[in-house]
Length: 517
Image 1 (cartoon, rainbow, N blue to C red):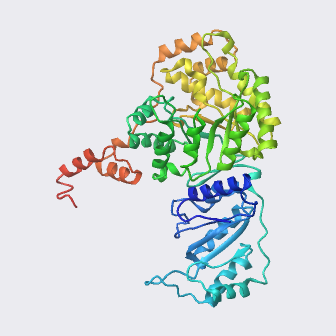
Image 2 (image 1 turned 90 degrees about the horizontal axis):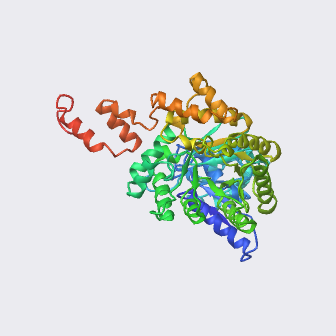
Image 3 (image 1 turned 30 degrees about the vertical axis):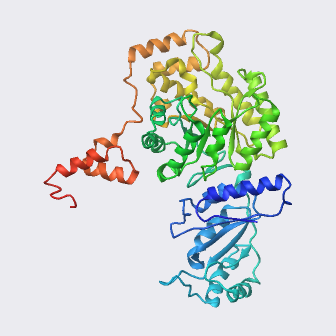
C-alpha cells in the first residue's frame, strides 16, 4: 500500500497506524509500504508547513520500503527537495513529478522527451530508486522516463541517522546526538507547574495560553512540554484543542512536542493531533509488565519517542541502585520485546526535592546524578531527562535561590550525561555568574555536604529577596513604539493587545492622518 501525504503528515501517520494495526491483527498479510509526500512550492515545505526532513522523521517509524515526493512540482523544481530526501533517509527513494508546471488553463505542456531528460538527472546522480509520473503524464511519458533511466544504477541508501541519534520533528527536524548540547524542554505549558497557564486553559483562553508556548520557544525551548492534567478539565479535549491551535502557529509548531500526562488516553489524544514526531511523557512499570508493554507498543505505532519514569511495582525509585535496576529492566523490555529504537528511549530517574527539612531527602540530587552515569554507561543509546524544577520545590516563591539551585544541578548532571530537562529556559542562571556565596551553599546542598545548607539557603533568600529574579516571561516588546508593537504582533500572530495598539496608532494624527495611510 501507499500512504500518500497531500495535506498533513498527520494524515499519513493515521494511515500508517491503521495499516500496521491491520497487519498486526492478521487482517492482511504484511506487505511493503510506500510513503509519498508533496512539497507545494519552492519553500521546500508541505502544505502543513513541514520541511522534507521533518516529514521523513514523522513517518520513518513505519519503516517504509520507499519514501519520496510526488505531484505539485515538475522535475526541475523538485530536484533540490529530492536531494534532501535522498540524503536524509535510509529507505529507497520514490519520485513521480508532474509534467512540468500547469499553464494558465491548468494543463501540462511538458513533452515526454523533455520530462524524461529532466528526470534522468535524478537517476544519473543516484538520487532515486523508483521513478514515475504524476499530473499531466501519459503512458508516453512513462515510456520515455524508462528509456532515459534504464541504464543508470539505482540509488544506494546511506546510513540511517536514527540508528545513532534521537531524531524528532515539529515543522522542522531536531537531531540530538552525543555531541549535541543540552536540550531545553519548555516547562511552562503545564497546568500543574504554571498557575498562569492553568488559569488560561481552565478559562478557555487558548490564545493567551499559546502566547506562553511562544515565549518558551523564543526563550530557547527546543521542545515544548504540554500537560493539561487537572480535575476541572476534560484532558483529552483540552490536549487536542491546544495542540490543534499550536499547529496554526509556525513559531511554536516548528519545535517537537512532548505530550505529557499521567492519563494515557490524554497522551493518545495528543498524539492523534501532532503531525511531527513527539515525545510521550511518560510510561512506567508501576502498573506491571503487561500494561507497560501495551502502552509501549502503542507509542511505537504512533511513531513517538518515550520517556520512561523510574517507577516499578514497588513504587518510585529513590536510591541509585533501584533507579538503575528499573531503567535497565524497562530498557530490555522495550528493546527486546517491543522492538523500540534505543535512541528513542529517554529515562527519567526522578529528580526529587532536596532541602525539605527531612534528612533522608538530602541525598536525592546525588542519587540522580549517579544513576545518570550508570544509565549512560550501561544502556546504549538511551537518553536521560528530568523535571528540573522538582529539585527546588522547597523554595517556591524564592526564585533567586531556585535559579541558582537549578543551574548548579544542571552543571553537574550534564557532565554526568543528562541529555535534556524540562526547564523554564528563560529562568536559568549561568553557573559562573552565580554569586560566590550562593554558589557555595548550592554546591553543598546538592552534594549533601552541609547539614545546615537548607537554613543557609532560606537565610540567603530572605536577605536578598527577589533582586536576582529575571522576569523571563515579561513581554519586553510592549515597550517598543506602537508601530513596532503592531509589526511584532502581526508577525507573531499575537491578538491580545491589537485593539489598544491600533487605537493608539489611530489617534496619532501627525504620523497617521487617515486610517489607511
